[in-house]
Length: 162
Image 1: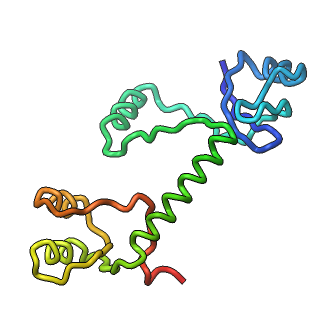
Image 2: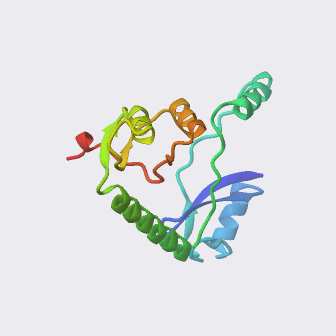
Image 3: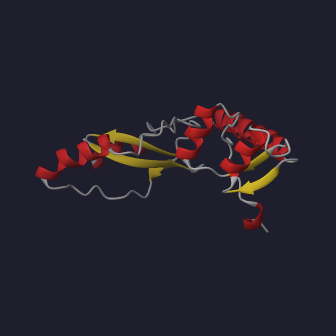
């Protein structure tokens, strides 16, 4: 079996398996291939990264390293054009709601944990702030009961925008 990355005339890329390159060409010539996203029959091979085999004695270690690494797999899904438009609209609405929420807040940068604690413990004027905190600082603030939450859409610090 051989795997090809295929692309339709609308630039949707997907993967398909064939017994051989000749089998792909036969199915393509007979119009048997369809884009799973839009149903287009104009299918061609897409540019692919070559599959480079590792040494036999390194495959197991590579798999174990990936499974035990701190990087976790990210779930992905194929979607239709309608789904993509709906997700885009939802992400846009989420970004707009977040921008409105922090619109009147104060950017405190990497001093977020200190400023949030000062507000929480009554040592500073109550106000809405946003900034950055590393995972350890975030865990500590949550353990203390501070009402903090991550921003769902990453933002650029004010001094990094133009």
